Length: 107
Image 1: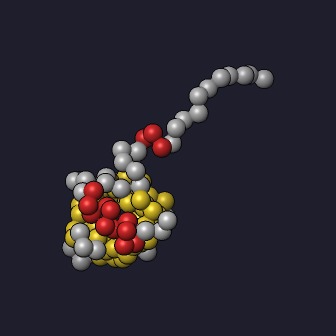
Image 2: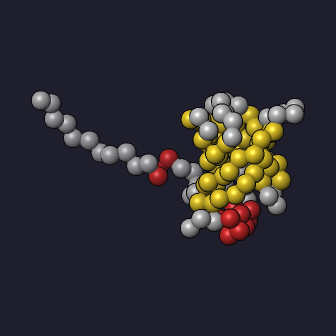
């Protein structure tokens, strides 16, 4: 048997900004005519977690259309079947996050 001491990883420490739990419908476009709906389940200044109706691929560039915010370009950072995380190319503003969280918050 081998024993070792270690310090557990801090999962929250890798986030650049706090997430807001939301439940809001949005649209995803990948250029051209391929558009689909998705549900955003958490949102931050720098990205979002998406539940999609079609599988996404890590590394893909998308245009996410948010209510009252408009289109935002993003890159899919990770994808697992119909759930994906994206990083916005330009951060959302605090006012936009607060407004969306207030209107569509889950908690």
